[in-house]
Image (cartoon, rainbow, N blue to C red):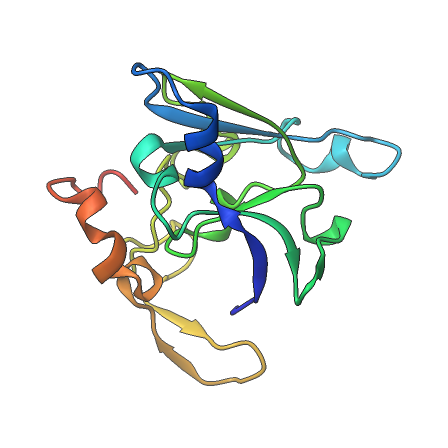
Length: 174
């Protein structure tokens, strides 16, 4: 989906914090509010939800800290109070309801890679040549249509972000 997010580049926040030289990753932790978030116990994953990025990914100008959409304050169902948005990655990398951001020298143990490592890797870049074990990712459907089209590498942002992954095996590091 194409959404008009309202936010700031994640890099502008990180630059204000001034990461220590050893910081190689950014870890995002979500809110856990059982009274407001029913069915946490039956979601099939552990909470709080944790997601992470390499520092170079987080510093890319397309990585956004989102506080709103469609010109309005971000509602709970879309990830309030903060969410991260990474248009070249699959949606689960865009952590929602973020209440803690931590800079670390170790790769975060992100929720989906811990829950089901055979299906979800740390990077989660849109790569149509790597199928999910239960479905193909070679094509996608535009919301509101029934027509399918080829999925583009890095969700069409290859020219902007491809250099972040130069030399990586993008089938192994999915």
